Amino acid sequence: MPGNMSRWLVLLALASCATAPSTDLAPGENPAQGSTEANLWMVMDRVETQLQTSGQVVRDPALDAYLSEIVCRLEPEHCRNIRIYVVDVPHFNASMAPNGVMQVWTGLLLRTDNEAQLAFVLSHELAHYVRRHSLQRWIDVQNKVNAASIFALVTSAAGIGYAGDIGALAALASIMAFSRDQEREADALGLQRAVEAGYDPYEGARIWRALRAEQAASETSARFVFLSTHPGVDERIRTLEAAAGAVPETGDRTLATGRLAVVTAPYLDEWLGDELTRGAYGESEMLLARLLERGSEPSLIQFYRGELYRRRGAPADLDRAVSAYEAAIAADPTAARAYRGLGQVLIRQGDDVRARAALGRYVELAPDAPDRLMIEEQIRRPR
Image (cartoon, rainbow, N blue to C red; front, side):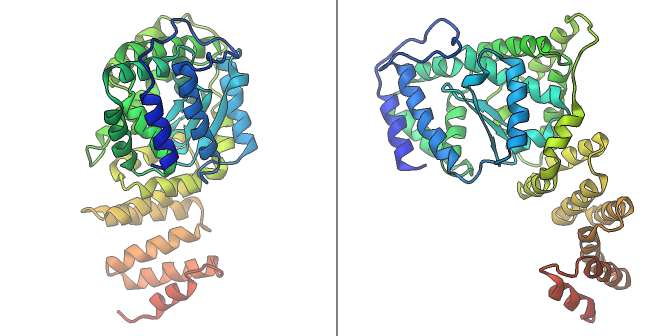
């Protein structure tokens, strides 16, 4: 973690014991100068400055405007004080800093089936912000743990693999995990705000069910950052479903699935490539299955299914890879990369005739590909 951030966190930890304000954050409210809350905001202001130059922020006015519109529907009185950053990290996560900085990670945008699901996640984080939960949790930690211990926790947690102060934020989130009561409160207020904004109340539980299914398919014990700081998934699903059932039926529930798909479509290829770099193939397999059900660009999704199976290489994965690549080609006969992947797998299976044909087709479709010379050598090489 960068030295400047470390010093800020230690200074904040050394602040005298304090109590959190008992009222919600008012629109446009600034903390009293010299207060623990003001110090916390100063730290987050520094983090925001470093985030802006981190190289991990997705710069897209259309995407930013879309997310801002959702936030303003959910919290119209607070939205003018909230700065939204789409951060290029392939994990499911959103967070809300006490100074009004909202992070939305690309892995979240990839996993939300519709605008309602995205709105429920954002509304949950906005509830933490309005209720000052981060401040309450920080003061609780500060009053119980000495500064050296907090510093050690932050610096060790920063090794989770994200760059710079984005890692520090994730580390801080893991240390300052909200209490169960705060989570319940954020769920209740988030559901209320989302329903008032016109979103289908059942979508809140559906996104949690999808995440739980992904986690169940994981080959490792690692958990999503979002899940690691949000306890009680089964309880949350039951509570959200019960609350949704108590909402009166209306005819104006908004999903706006098409809008979410349109603003994220330019990034689907890139984000899927980033997803596979995680190496969490069981989770990615579940995600790709959901994307196919969603109807998102079937040739592209099938290509990445082929890539997943080719890379994982478990028993029967090569056959699965062949089927996926062939499905990608059937959906789009000009899908050059699918021919390349198919050829590589067929080589491993010893099917030289079909492999050469597939690789030859790849070269025809992508004559300017940077790996063309290597592929042509593979075609000529006797086996």
